[in-house]
Amino acid sequence: MEMQLGAMLYVYKGEYGLPSIDFECLRALCLLRFTRCPMDVQTSSNPLRSGAGKLPYLQIGNQKFAGYRQIKRVLDLEGYPIDAHLSTKQKHLSTAYANWVFNNLHAYYHYFLFGEPNNFDTTTRGLYAKRTPFPFNFYYPSSYQREACDVVQVMAGFDVNDKLDKHEGDYLVVNAKKVVNLLSRKLGRKVWFFGDTYSEFDAIVYSYLAIIFKITLPNNPLQNHIKGCQNLVNFINRITKDIFRNEGYSSVKLTKTPSGTEASLTASERNFLDSDLNTKIVAGVGAVLAMGAFAAWRGIYNQLTTRSSTDYDGIDYEDDEMEEGLD
Amino acid sequence: MKSHYLSQLDTADKLSAEPWPEDATLYQPYEAEQILLPENASCLAVKAYLKMCNLPFGIRSCANAEHMSPGGRMTKLPFIRAGAFIFAEFEPIVNFVEQKELAIGSWQDEDEKSDMRTYVSLVENIFTMAELYISFKNERVYKEVTAPRNGVVFPWPLNHMQNYGKRRNALRLLKVYQWDDLDIDSVIDKVAKCCETLEYKLKESPETPFFYGDQPCELDAIAFGHLFSILTTTLPNMALAQTVQKFKDLVEFCRFVDEKYFQTRCLPN
Image (cartoon, rainbow over all chains, first blue to last red; front, side, top):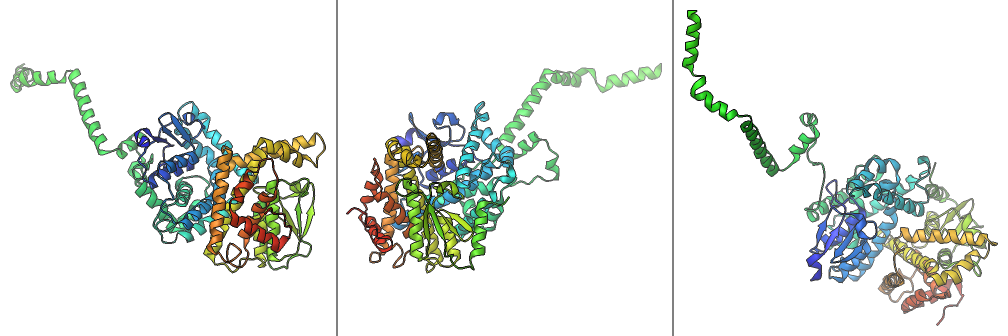
């Protein structure tokens, strides 16, 4: 098939153990991995090349498909439709619920990731800027902020550029909590929302909640609420660990908590401790070689050999001392 | 400062003990000269809902209804004044009525209710966006219908400024809901899919007239509002109406609800 030869999906690299930091990218990745579509994923890319100024985009040969909707259409046509295993009723419900989740969480997501000035400046801008090559990293994060401005204006009815105390975030939080409660009740003890098979609804719920749950923002009221719904937490962790085993990325290993000794280390030392065994061996061999080379250059080997043969013999010393004694 | 939406929720709570006010009034633009397709659909949906609940209300048409509205997510219309309180758009009005325990659909269990709510939001979303798309993105419809109708109540040059502002808002709405880069075929496709969902839902209980059995619920009101408006509004581009007409059961459903609650009988055979 043409698709398996040269198809490549370009997304933002992940963080916090997630495969991507961006909602649309995560959604596209879900489509790919849920349906087990054999396609490569490239995590270092330039939004400029997508043609839409945004990731994700899918490249097959010279053709580019930017945005979730187009990617979904390509996958549908190529024989990887996400809702294929559902019954007719479930298919209809999946679309309806996906749309409902979008209606209720889209504004929350955009406001707390991009609209809230403190959150954006301390965390989100950096996340996006690090994943965009210079000099575009000065431009693209702000383009997301402008988009969020529109989303919040339309879906929540206030202006992000207003003073902070005019932001009506409370409504978004109350609404989002209601949605999370309903999702938790609807999921129950099931593996997927519709029992044994995945759906687009699962993909969209995972994409919103995983980011909101994992990201560390100064102000993110929904995070603790999700923590309270154990089945949703399990749902997020299971998909992250099982399905995105290879794509999950985190710049800091979350399993190690910095203890007393580690806290005193410098950044490069901590990096070294976190690196793989292979790297450590290579580094060790390299260090030994370097030191050996340095030693050779300073002529230490020569000194060692000459010293052992003639100059510093025990006898010579004794002779010297005896001569001194006689004087 | 307290959020406008939150205070709406709170007042709805406080009001729940009081009876339905006698002088409840629904505000909307002038139907014959001014109203646009998306606004007409949402007004009709609210009217159908209140009639299904059997609640008395008056209708007042004013030119500046949109500017009096406290705001909403999509069309901001219609809004209802009940006692001292004002609610705009379908969902807040439905929530308000439900707080008073006068609402239809209280016989549904939790699961059925949440399913029904998602269908309501799907229908509202897809149809409103499709109506906005055809009204503001289709050049011919915009020039021949939308712009003259929207500007009719304003003197020159204010009408051009109003049209410009309205179109900008509509395009922004389409952009946020990710409809701005669609072509007309994908819009038709989305509408057809939504109609399929509705028809499937209707056929689940073939011998009963409504979506959920013998009694009407919110889904009936909103589906009727949008489908009936699309079917009965004449535009230079009738693509939406032609799509809906392919679903005979839905047309039949509209005819039935019209007969039962409105008796306008303007649906073509």
